[in-house]
Amino acid sequence: MGTILPTVTIIKYKPAPMVAIFSSRGPSSLSKNILKPDIAAPGVNIVAAGTSSPYSMKTGTSMSCPHVSGLAGSIKSRNPTWSASAIRSAIMTSATQINNMKGPIATDLGLIATPYDYGAGGITTTEPLQPGLVYETSTIDYLNFLCYIGYNTTTIKVISKTVPDSFNCPKDSTRDHISNINYPSIAISNFGGKGSVNVSRIVTNVGEEEEIVYSAVVNAPSGVKVQLIPEKLQFTKRSKKQSYQVIFSSNLTSLKEDLFGFITWRSGKYSVRSPFVLTV
Image (cartoon, rainbow, N blue to C red; front, top):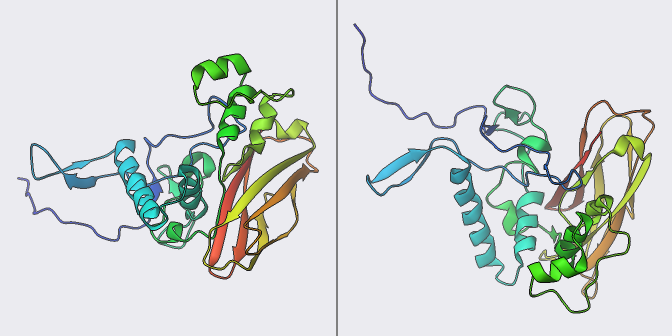
């Protein structure tokens, strides 16, 4: 004879978060020069208001989306002039890769998760409100992306009616240039055959302090050298944007698997982290 016991709510489950089996994984099928996914958010056994009943419990990426949307709304309410790309940057660069047991976030199989599993990491709720720096992806970045994946100027102007009349695809429109789109993450394809790769980024100071200096901290995989130029970014009242270059090089004769790391700009309470991936 079986016994049915009352249900019990388990709070503070450990380890959490964990990447669910159904979560969308990378790399992107369109291009390995841009990292996907962007971010991870709660999506398992989510309790919310229902229609046929007072509440319902559901699981899926459709449950993760409202969490990110709500967070984006909170950021927008606090920073009403921010663009969508600035909000995305704030969410990504403040994400965590650590679970509630102070260990690395794992997958459903118990393996240590990588940016292919969670993008920049799991969302946090307060840090994105004051990220310090943001990566703003411009309209031209997106138009150039279309050029890089094979569309010509004429086709792009048919697709988008808001393309500036002066816009033309760069003469050297190859997929490798996708890595230079001003995104909060970095991805480089076929790194093993290139020896050294240089990419650039622009960050905007949105912190409370107008006069501030950020220093770079790099977590690189074994056998890979990551050089930042410059290693410090100094912002002033008149200079809210700063650019930097990242030079990836390796003494490995060949890559047997994709490699992951992080670049973090730090200053006081701010920690602006960007993941990178170097693919075989």
